Image (tube, rainbow, N blue to C red; front, side, top):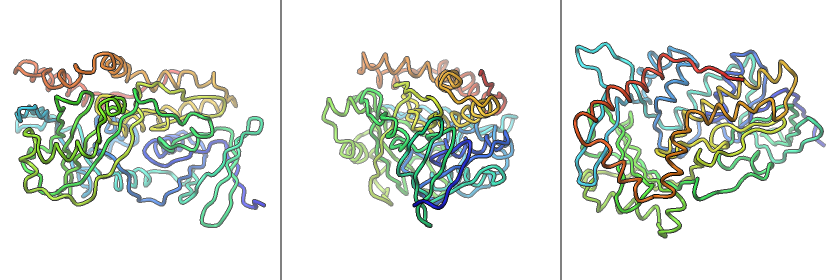
Length: 410
């Protein structure tokens, strides 16, 4: 018999970037809630560790001081001032926004941090005044009775029952909420496999800590990356669309190792490098699937909602953005005491809106996969386009991240 019982309007399962951000903004909206996670933080998480402009934008929405004052002084966060494209020839094309002596632009576009540190940093922003945060709590079974969710869980004290009206699935690709809904399925056209390994002593890194990308010619819809980190290590990885991997019978770990050891574009940079861990693999549910993310009394955020950007595998900023939208839609639902799917219809529209271009491109490349890496390797070759990307595209990203508020269309 379960003797411990928690009743709440809202329960969030998962305290990664999506769940933590949902909690943070629910607290800002003065909504009491429960957030649970099976892990105890800080905990490790396999990831590329890059924090892009979307992540920076969401941190600015939490608190303007985070990016300008906290992260630059944090020992585990490395500012990155741009992107490097590595060509198959070995030539580098660099896109840096590092301010010069005559520049007034001091807004850093990217950061890099191990998820061990970044997720713990976000957790520290959860407000205990409104959030009951239960770590080391595993939800085993989900049952819906009428309009009430019953979550049968266990923690270090034993069995626990949590009842709520609104259930938020923030527990990633292997979500217990997805399993309950019967939605835990992999579509290889909209899923990627990837590996990551930390290295020390990688040669040829840019002084501005540029995030480096390499698109191998012979394997479409795939890329290799090198992200410098604050402790002198590099996050090095490789990802490929699962359908391509299946059709070409690609062993992702083997391809990753072969690039490092033999590919003339990058191999010389690893001649003195040392791996500090074994390869770590994980899956990426891509936003191009446009998963069903809402229903009566439930919604999904982050990886559970398949919110990975198809072109670059970035998911942290997208996850945080879904949390921002979720919190505002939940607040409205509580105010109206209505939790039906129709009341959350615009939530789905909102979270996919900024990714529509990416989604269309992904569907195009599914038809013509051989074009994908060719485009990435040849898109910016002349000086005019190079300067355009820096001055217009990238500075546009930064301006949005630091100066534009996200508006909610209910």
